[in-house]
Image (cartoon, rainbow, N blue to C red; front, side, top):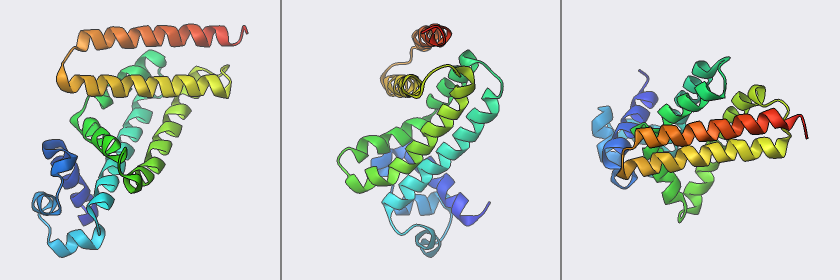
Length: 185
């Protein structure tokens, strides 16, 4: 594993274990088993490292979603997305989003990755909903992402997989009805 990837994997592990507030250069250095010089050569600040770690996880998750969804329908795509967003790595990334609320530099650094993920999801949904206009497609994409984020955060305090599945089935059903009726309007 290259040193940069080793550091990113270590940063992700530290964020999962200690949260964003517990992400320190010393912890990452120890977890990655690299020198301080190697760490600072690749990442000059904690913010830069945190954003790169989230982008690193998001890229892997995006590729996984794309591969798993393939020619699958909305049900399968939503199931894959749900599984990804239940992982501790996803929830750790959401901690950065919350921190970005009061940190304009962090917010600006996170935006490109969030936009890329949104475009990737949109690209996966377009073949499923070809008749939707851009505005309606945007509503569905944003609605799905918001739903999944809410379930991920809710899962921190309570584990209700049966209820989550029912919520997702209802969303997919509503999604299917809207796409079926899209060409009729």
